[in-house]
Image (tube, rainbow, N blue to C red; front, top):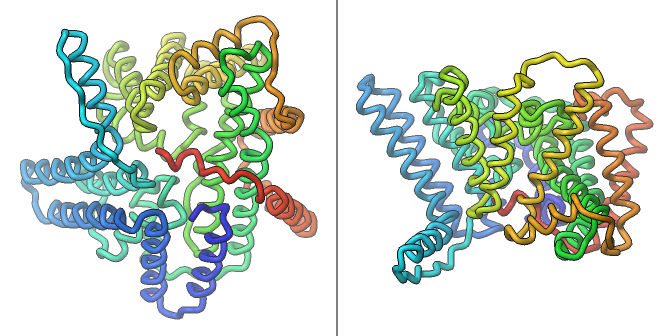
Length: 467
């Protein structure tokens, strides 16, 4: 049940009408909880049990943790939460990869080992809701949360359908207080929510799927035969595709939540307008980058130790962030590239220096280039394809695979970069509010018309569903 499917739109319309029709706040929360489980069951009913297990374990662990002051007992309870949640994530996501690596490692010592191939289907959204529920027990362990919510409210926090399968990863301290006060119907909030849904659908269906994805797919499928211009158009197209795909999903999630009276924080803030690598990570997948900052980088020591300890913490965090995306060496290399760039930026002192305008523009361009160099590893199927693409990006002019979408892709790329660089600190919600109501209505109508016209093509899953 994808956000850009007719099935979801009908489902959401039914939930929305029923939600605001019901009178009691408890009844409304029951409806949302049931709808969330139905939404997830549409992917695979069996895996609803995994969410229920994670929910129950962390709710019980958190409740017990609040009742004891024993440091050893609290550590044991936290360990139970970590083992259960990360154990499930590791089994479903990394088992086959780790077995293959074990086989390759043994082969280097002359030992023959044929690892079993398990037919494991990755539960959609497990990487997201695992981090979400873990943050609750960790915050209680640290004393940042000092109270326990009802099982129903906690279950709704874990399974809230607008952001269940691909984020944004919400924090208990932000979401759970919203479950205590009844949502109040607001035409303005509903209108803004629907406007965000329309914008998100336009990003996904038109910009990502129809205009740039065909070019990116064609170029990366022929990585060994493209030239300089083709390689860069393909790489920039993928950069645009993954942004509009994921930012589109996040925008729809924020919009649907707003329609139901809930606030979810922004997940993207003009990342290609970043003026540094640390700035990029404060703008790209914000809910994940802040999760790794708060629950991994800072506990490792952050920047409080020696210079080399800070470099180690940066690299470990980015390697694990890369591995979070999938069981592949390519994701690890992608994380390594970003870790190396963050280390170099800190070594040069560029993360804190105030640059002259020209120097700042030059560095921002370098950041943009290196972010897209890293995307090559993220998108390529293997190292050979990635190196072929990188070689083409630094080589001579050559052929550009013809799909018929190239002019649209170039327009989207240029428009995206100009907009994000020029309005790097503007929020989409504020931009929409600043428009005249008539103009905003006409614009949203045009966007929805384009979504309708382009929705009949090849359907693509949201990229981050695979993570």
